[in-house]
Amino acid sequence: MKIEQLYEKCLSQASYFIEHYGIAAIIDPIRDIDRYLELAETSGAKIKYIFETHFHADFVSGHIELAEITGAEIIFGPGAQTSFASTVVQDGTTFNLGDHSLTLLHTPGHTLESSCYLLKDEQSLELALFTGDTLFLGDVGRPDLAQDTTKQLSQEDLAGKLYDSLHTQILPLPNHVIIYPGHGAGSACGKNMSNEKSGDLGSQRNFNYALDKDLSKVDFIKLLCNELPPPPAYFPYNVKLNIEGYRPLKQVLANGLASLTPWEFVKRMDLDGTLVLDTRSAVNFSQSHITGSINIGLEGSFAPFVGAIIQNTQQEILLVCDSGKEAEAITRLARIGYHQCTGYLEGGIKNWMENGYPFDVVNNITAKEFNSFHISNSQQIIDVRNTSEFLLGNVPGAINIPLTAQIVAPEIYFSTKESFVYCAGGYRSMIFISLLKAKGIHSVVNVIGGYNTIKMEENLA
Image 1: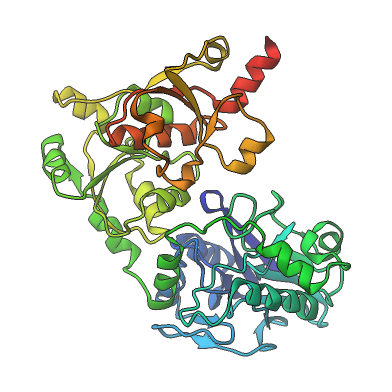
Image 2: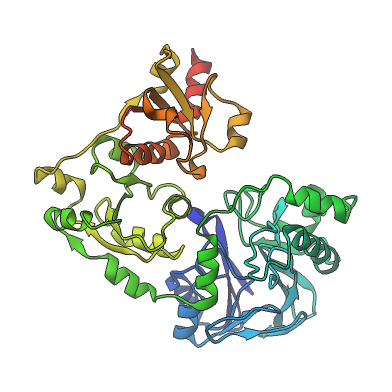
C-alpha cells in the first residue's frame, strides 16, 4: 500500500495518491494534474477513482481533466450535483483497491456533501481517514462556506451537523487511525490548524479543541461560529467552477503565454480595466516597476492573495515576471480559477526600462533605521498584518489595516501623512504599498523585514 501526500504550500492544501496492487485513487486533486499521472506511471498503476471530499471553495480541483485523461470515475458524497459526469454515492459505499478498500463516510457540516474516506486493509482493520475539510489537525472546517443557494441553513445549523458528524462517524474510530486532512496552517478553511501534515486520531482527541469530550453541542456551535472572519470573495466563484466545470488548463496556458513587447504591452495596458500584476519579489518590485502595477510575489501565498485582492475574476491581467516564471504564474492563477491572463512582458522589467518606458520605485527604510526614527505628527505607521497578529504585539501607535480587508480604510489615513508600512516579513507590506501607489498615493515607505526584524533589532539594541 502506497500513500503519498502532495502538499501545495501556496494553498496550504493536501491531495493524496493512494495505490495498491496497481489500482490508484486520487483524493482532492489540484488543478495541474501532471503530478498524479507521473506517480501512476512510476507505480505502474491505473488511476481508477477520483474522490472529492466536497465542493472546494479555496481552489479549483483537477477532477475533470484527470478523469478525461485517465477514464477514472469521479466520486462525490450524498447530495452533490454536478454539470459533468460524476458518481454520487451514499454513506458507507465501499471501493476496492486490491485487497484494501476505501469507504465513504458522509460527514456534513463544513458543507452538506462533505465526506471522509476510510482506508481499511485486507483484514478490515481501519488504517487511515482522509478527512478533507471536516477534520483538520487542531481544528475542524468552517461552517459558513457552503454555497446554500436556498438559504435554508444557517452557519449554526451546519455547525450542529458537523458536531453530529464528528461524534457519529469519526470519534468512534480507534485511536491508531491516521488522520490525513485536506489543509494545514495558513488555509482560510479553518481557524486553528496545526503545521503538522498528518497525525493519529488519539492525539486529536487530546489536543483538538473541537473534539473535547466535555464540549456540548450547544457550546461547540457557539465556539465554532464565534468571530468567523469573512471568507475570501473568490470562494463562491471556485465552488461554481468545481460544480459546473472550467476551461482546460492547456488552453489557459496558451492564452496567457503570449509574449508582448513593451510597445504591445502598453497598448494592452490602455484597455479599460486591464490590471498589471507583477509577480517578482518585494525587493525587485521596490527597485523598479511599471507605474500602477500590483505586486503579489510568487515566493509567498500567491494564489490566496490574488483571490483576496483581485476580486474581479474576469478582469484582464497582464503579467510581469522573472524570466522563466510565466507558466508558473499562470498555473497558480488557474488553481483558483483566474483564467484571464492574456500575456506577459517580454524580457521583463529590464526590457521595459531599456526601451525608455517610465517606471516607479518604492522607498524603503531598514528596521534599524525605523527603530531610531522619530515619527512626527505628519507621519503615521500602518500595520497590515491580521488583527490576531497585531494583538499579539505591534509598534506603539501603529494603525492596524489588515491587507486582506482590502484598502477600504478612510482615505484620510493617506491623504496628507507619510506612512511607514510593515507586515511580518515584508511580503504583505509591499502588496499593500503597490495597491496604494496604484491609487495615486505615493507618500509611503516600506519597512524592510517587517515586524519580525523590528523586534529583532530592538532586542539587539
